Image 1 (cartoon, helix red, strand yellow):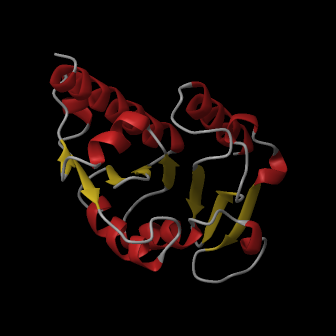
Image 2 (cartoon, rainbow, N blue to C red):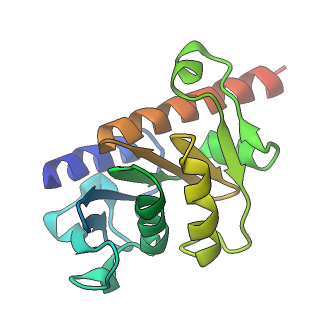
Length: 182
């Protein structure tokens, strides 16, 4: 499992979807969550950057888990997700300031994402408010955008969550270029 965390983390960084220490990844296995640490460099993920904790209990290395652990737990409890990818795609974040949802115009984006709802929260990093709002949206959509912060994508695997994240970012870039490059 550590190898897929390393591959996906590297892809996120190389694609410019996260900064050097941004974003987080997790995978659920039954009542256990494997999640990246707070401040991990996903582009250079090491085995020690991935911690295990309970879905319902704070055990293992939960104290060094991502600050978004509360959100990941809520998503797992309220959806069928087996993997979660949180990134900071620039074009999607920019569009979140001007839209209530991002609706892809391109073929690939439209095929994978009907629309990506934009969720607003006062405190956007690891808050109870985000943990209450984001899972509701992810019950019916594979990806949501937290206004001014980033995306949360779900899937059967981290590969699937990455596919939706990259498709949304390309769709957002296409929308931006179409609307604002005239």
